[in-house]
Length: 180
Image (cartoon, rainbow, N blue to C red; front, side, top):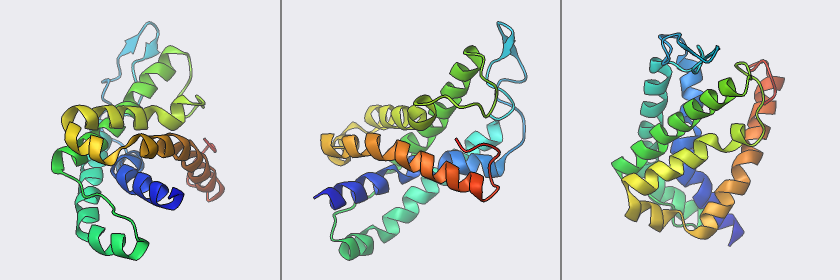
């Protein structure tokens, strides 16, 4: 039971988990905030770019479509009924994740935190909360079928753990400047 919940939660969230990483790899380009300040601090900062947002969103959608192609054999191999992604759901998860991270940057700047500074709690769940909200708005039937209360609990518990483990790993490998 727990194994199937974890598998379903992880699978269903992959289109939201991957976009921010893809955005970092795409990096650079024009900042979304255009370099503007608000109340003495950047609105978002140089780390939030149009290119990164577009590439991150596209990566999440393409990943969801790829997962659709392997859902049946993966389900059979794992003994779990893994969901396939409707296109609106895939887009909502990916774009919602990007928007959640952008919103977190806005809140970080308002609290005086610089780019890369830790903001415990927000750093781990910003993208998840907005991605889930977006998918429930955009494709309610799909979201209700996939994100049962049990799956939602697993997502909310699993995500911070995955976030910490992957960030510490990336830091240890020299891929990040800070371990959060």
